[in-house]
Length: 260
Image 1: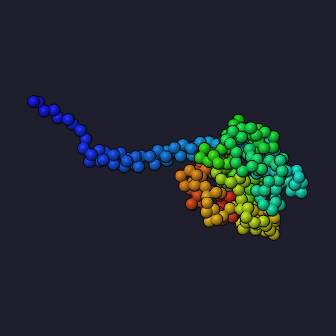
Image 2 (image 1 turned 180 degrees about the horizontal axis):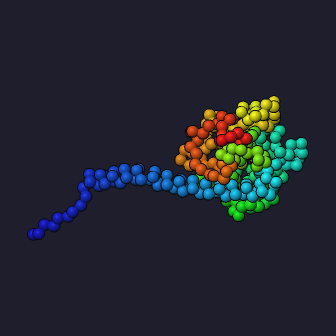
Image 3 (image 1 turned 135 degrees about the horizontal axis):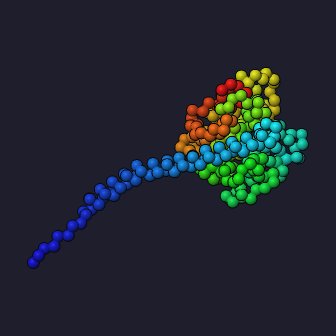
């Protein structure tokens, strides 16, 4: 009788193969995740560069004065520029308008809501963009807007173009709270040293949010592999590692009226 030999894997061989596949997957999958996040970072840079063009067109239409981060509701007639609010991010009424499409009366919304904004809720830059989706960071889908505009004292916001002598100052960057970012924890922020302004403290004059207090990475997020994308006044949008960000009030990253 002819004996037939059957070739088959033993249990040990099968376990070895599974272990090798698991090791390779553990090595390769993080690489794929990083590549995917790098693509989102690139999309985020594209978004902010389009914002840079919109901000430049806005400035051209408004006598070379930069866009503000928002105007308060007419009910706040004594403070239309939102300088004296007890809480900087407070909802002021249905006609308040932010630089980006944003409804401050709600905390979250379906992804489709952004596309339905019109009137004051559509934001100052709406006439200068073709697609409101540029205000959504592809790596942040929890809030209405994935970016914030700096509204610190001696920042570029609301200032004439001639005021800004530091082209590398940040204007907009990734954010995970509201479309405005400053040290909102207290009123009467001291005028930043080195700004050339020796006047006393002024209500609402806020400085940059201190990096050491941003323990949850809300204001300077680790959104794109331990960093964020920031738009500078000169129109350049680049990745920045939050851990090496200098948050002192004299930093060239934030102050617009000091030489870079």
